[in-house]
Length: 95
Image (cartoon, rainbow, N blue to C red):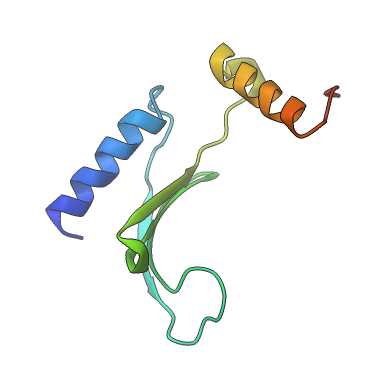
């Protein structure tokens, strides 16, 4: 992984994970020549129940998944999620 990509990942994590919950344990470099759907050429950086994907074929597009306990979710994220559900026509949320 070159320095420019490393810097891009660090910048992304700073904007995405302000609580520093992402803890990398390992990374993989994957390249599938015959994969018809999904990612074919990518990096995966992962930790316990966490992952960050770097799509090399699409200009190093980044996506990440970091779980939060419901009690730890920030109010702004909870509000944004509720607004999104309302836009989809889902008016009530059950625990």
